[in-house]
Length: 128
Image (cartoon, helix red, strand yellow):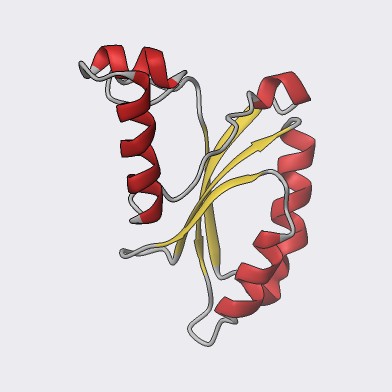
């Protein structure tokens, strides 16, 4: 969105809007910008939420490093509760999802629970 268009929404001119955005960037309020990629356009038509529990002596650092190598991972969060991680993925299909979970191996995992996302709910307060 242009500074002119954004400024019209908040009753400011383009220059004043640009100045405010630059101040917010310098202050760290705006941490960066990103592109939102539609997973389906690149063949990732299956979305899944996977709960992962590691063994009591599990290698969290190794597991997280392995997750970082997977392009399909949209979100990986260390969480509270009965599982250690919540992982959201967009994959090319069930065979790829199965391949990823199997390749994590028994040495890393104590338990997983995988759910397929049927559709996402569009929320008014979310960008995009």
